[in-house]
Image (cartoon, rainbow, N blue to C red; front, side, top):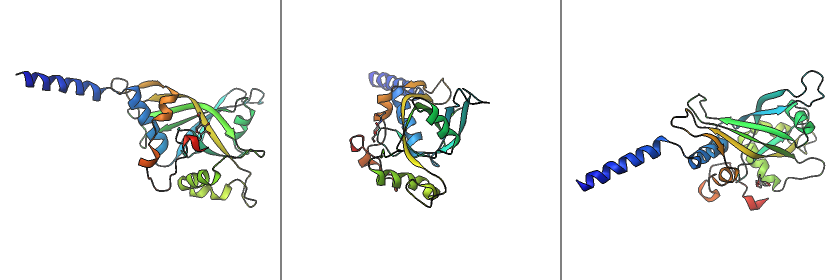
Length: 212
Ligand SMILES: *[C@@H]1O[C@H](CO)[C@@H](O)[C@H](O)[C@H]1NC(C)=O
């Protein structure tokens, strides 16, 4: 009798736990979306500069290649000054942008994450450290980008490496009755990625936090 009671109790507790995502679960799912996205293409949003003749202060969103090459979930970008996003980012005082990544098969019931933050562009002599690691990590996701890499005199366009650092993470796990919807604390997002030693995914090298 007692044992049955305990079993029933455990069943209820487990049922509640699996039915509702905690913010910790959400952080792991968010990092999985960012780190293991099949195509490594995000939707980026930026804002047109105020003095733009037609579209001042308007939001603008469009797909963008990215690669998750940092242990803390910051994102590696190839920054082409010619692109609309890059021009908006350059004109924004703090180089603001938002990047969102969704599940492989996007749906209202599936997880997606929006990162809000700033872009550091490694231009004008500023160099990203561990450049070879970042380059290999990025090219593993986007082999076609080899035609527009920085420091290539034959490249079609000028390009710079850049790093997007989120300051805010907003997560929608799916429908709110069973999934977490809301902000994920930055520290939790940053520490919820795969451990480098446990993730020998071919072609993907995670730069450790202390590494750069
Ligand atoms: C994330 O880690 C990289 C090094 O891999 C570091 O340069 C960057 O500042 C970190 N970002 C944040 C927001 O802590």
